[in-house]
Structure formats: structure tokens, C-alpha cells
Image 1 (cartoon, rainbow, N blue to C red):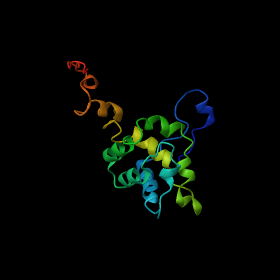
Image 2: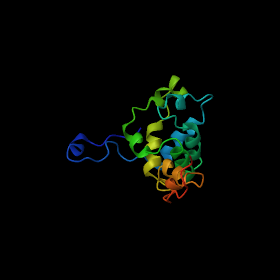
Image 3: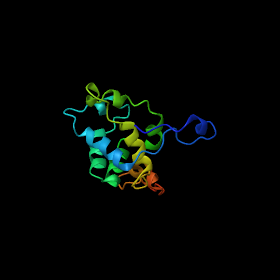
Image 4: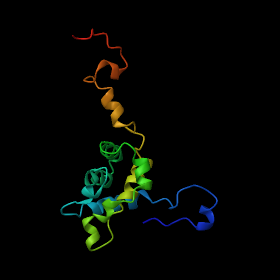
Length: 148
């Protein structure tokens, strides 16, 4: 876990509480997730994030794909990575014998680190713009006559 910034500094600003966590340590935490036999973390997650999938991608240094997987279930990881109480970490199987994987930290790093701007628009907008959507959802007028 990253160290907290000194209180004397924090009372004068609104910056992050924790000091930056090196990318290599984030990848080590993601690798620890791969030691799990049967993951229960995603069942503990209120937004049902596919945690093992994006942790595996972070471990393999595929940050852009990892943020896409995270956005498939969570449109706002930049918020949840900061304010979520992380029940997924309480559900982490590794937490039985050792400290759980720092899932919240990895999610926050994904939303602010390498590749975070890739595919960062909410998925609901992408679905609304899909060709299958009605014309009004694509910004085109619906010129069909009302059916009787």
C-alpha cells in the first residue's frame, strides 16, 4: 500500500492522500490476483467489475485493453477508484492468509495511469450511437409516419 502524505501537507490542499504508487508495484499487486484459485472479488463488487480480467491485463502490461475491460462494467472508475469502500478487497480469497490484493488502488491507477484516456467515453453513449439504435438516438430525425 502506498504511504500517506504527511498531514501537515494535506491540510493545506485537496490533493491525493496517498503518495504515488510506482507502476511496477501496481503490476506486482495485479500479479498477486493471478494466485487466486476461485475469485470472489467480483461478487463483492457493487458494480460487478470483472476484476481478475483487468488485473491480468495490468500484470501483462496491457494497460489500454485493461481500461477497456474496466469500462465495460464501470463507466466512472475515476470516481469509484477513490470513493468506493472496496468490498471486493474484503472478498479477496488471498485475504484469508495474507493481505488482499489492492484492487481499489489498481482501479484508481487504471483510471489515471497509462492508457486511461483510451476508450474513456461512457459505454452508454457508444450504445446509443450504434447502428441498431433508433434514428432519434443517432441524432437523426425520425421521418416515419405514425402507424395506426
